[in-house]
Image (cartoon, rainbow over all chains, first blue to last red; front, side, top):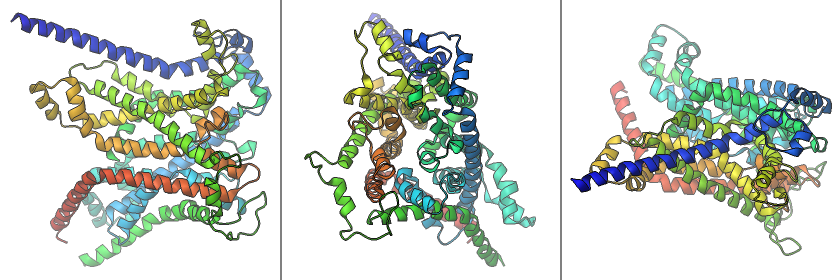
Length: 289
Length: 326
């Protein structure tokens, strides 16, 4: 009896220690995740002199207005232009990749055609090819056809998004019963209409998840736009950010942090609003893949 | 009548796949073939000459591996090793941390509170533009005045500010840290989903048999999530081998090539004087072969479970077809 009690006590003691360790580690990691962005946001509101005296501050300064003014006079970094270009490209990419991925996934799921298997194998195969590998050929072709600086070259490739197709196909398998499609056929609906009016609404949850990821992926893409766009008026947000590395910002600490904040803040806000869907989307995508 | 209809419908399969096939051919397949082609040619310089195969078609490839005049390893090989090194050093802690956290968060006896909050916060760095993160860390580690130096000085850990981005190992360590920091949250969420997918009866049975927490972790959790771990490994490897944004914007591949990854090498060869598109293409091809080889090797390790899955799917398909009466 007595030993039993001791064992019980030590067990609860163990579990308290265990729990404490968990919370300490998680809190440290959480601070590590937030601190860089916090420092960035705070320093965006401080003057260069303040930052030179003490580069870390937990509370905001009073220099936000001056920093904004200065950043707009330095000219190379133009957040408005970057946002506009990024928005045009990302929204188009998202719409194209989500719609056509649904269409392609439906073609694979709903119909029996001869080359289907080979085609799906191809889809899985090219998922593994990173953009770096095709970059040189892509750039040289664009260059020779005078398509450098053409936004369409960044938008149209989204029609073939193998990752999204793969996800959509997995989703269709669980969500769509062919009986619904067949009954629509009996009612005399055309195949394309059936897809648009019956299949697409069923796929809404999967479309929402994939839309978030295509949008964020496209918004954050630096490599391809940097290679393809060389006119400042067509720069996207990540290219604008990379300009903050330039010499004129060497002594303007406040401006650099402000520029960084301008690019990160919209994403942080969107993320906090949609975090539930994003986190469950990450889980879903991996388990199904 | 029925048969005729079936034939008719198959046409739509092709029709609906056409946009994908077209876009894929124009924007991926053709560029890949073109890259493959120029890897064997004289395509170089600001205004490249007429495309011609080299006398020794493998010349560009040989150059990639040829020692430098000083007798040191070629820049390409160095970049390959650097990339592999950065990836390995970022991936081991990343996976360990993710595994540990996923075991903690799914432990039904401890029940960690605020899990939702932790998940959201741990994943946060992944959603922010890598370019922004790179420049932010460049600012954080700047010299002589920067937040990190400020903290170190306040804590009296250093007397003089430390120039992180001027030294090889610290710069590489920062790149490795950023990669790990950006991705462990994503890996953790993936693994949590995998652990939740394990049949809870297995854990209950083990608990009844008196298995400890550590035993459960090593004997049940790890073997069960192995396929997902391999999936994470493959995707991380592909991403890691084509790493560009962070090392490029943090340190331009420097100092002294310490963070020059293969992707940066490829970029520098074709977009800096003397514009060696052919060498850059050759490097892309080698990288592509390495990626295909690595993923093939990893899928080969996974093959047993996949084969079983495929067989099961086939059976289901057969049943479905039989049910339809085809």
